[in-house]
Length: 61
Image (tube, rainbow, N blue to C red):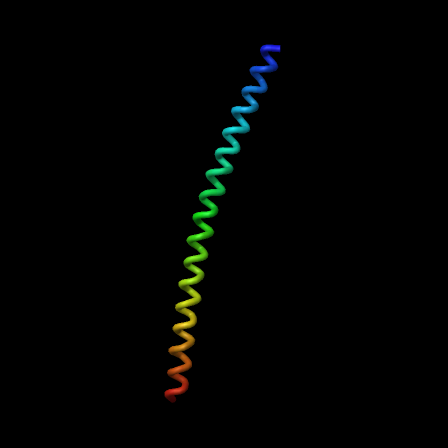
């Protein structure tokens, strides 16, 4: 019975470690997702600005 309890404790520790690793990975993924979202917004703004400049340039011709 003692050996069984030791095995269960070992499994619990292993699962807790795995869970913590998954939490950290999720946090890193959320941060990366936010960075990519901000980068996409900046690219869209730049694209809109360039389209506006191009439209003004074509109209000026």
